[in-house]
Length: 373
Ligand code: NAP
Ligand code: ZN
Image (cartoon, protein in one colour):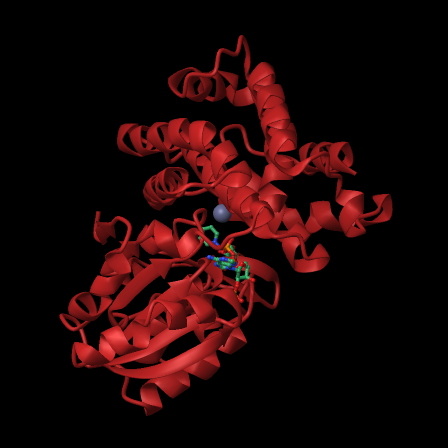
């Protein structure tokens, strides 16, 4: 695992010491609201400066960051002579920070490194600036992955490069305490989806499955408490499990559930984790005829007493409803007329489909979306 993980409550206070090993002038990347305030509340700028690291602040990352944002700030990082990126926030600021670190050394446009499947991607030649990643949600695992998901002209697509593995992940659960129940549930379901998708993925291996199972076991036990009555121990467990599920996808990748989710985020504004929470049960049901044994294997390893993959999918449906209530795609304005378009867009996530045992046809995708209308 190329990323050193610093895990535990209070660890963010070590950011200065950790960053000063890699650079002297940091671009400090956060989102616009919660993560910006968290950086202030936890004195991240002062901690860096006290350790001799100058700070260039960038508090403007939007949700589901675009390649344009990355390009603009990569230019700035170059102009300002930044030699390290410290990214603090949910997956959006972390992914933006990682992509900025790569574009700062290789030069924009960053979109040329993104796997779109519509044009050949370039391989970055230069190392990225060193990255310190500090998650404030417990879900994406971006702090330990070689991925940055960017919104480009054809939708949400991954930039995949070993250069963007963060040097250090500071996983401090105290930064997640301010998450409201819905965000806790959605991000937690992102992590569960990572664990399950990586487990069933074609590229899975015994090591990734070990991370998947440990993450899944913890999430199924701790997420309900983190959503309904959060305490330091459930928050710590979710921060840890999310990181473990990140290691699983770093090894094995995600599969079709992620592929189906992106259009729900880009076109209907459904949060990444919420989209996965909705999609996971019906997608696993469709997959049960081609990789039911793997799905059931995961269920048994995480201690769910299911007799079949379909039963596990039903169990997950109940689990999701207990966290977010009964939600339908129509709550976000998705209508039957849009299904054809959604199916078409989802087919563009070729990497996710190819990593799914037995593949996933347009009619499979249609079945899933229709079930959720
Ligand atoms: P996010 O998009 O980073 O943030 C969602 C919202 O939550 C923002 O308004 C954010 O505020 C707020 N927020 C963040 N931390 C908070 C806290 N502690 N308390 C209260 N509010 C908080 O959400 P996310 O689910 O963490 O990340 C989703 C993104 O990650 C998507 O783009 C997804 O594709 C990507 N992703 C990447 C990977 C990977 O391996 N790279 C894996 C999975 C998902 P701000 O305004 O401060 O941002
Ligand atoms: Zn995800």
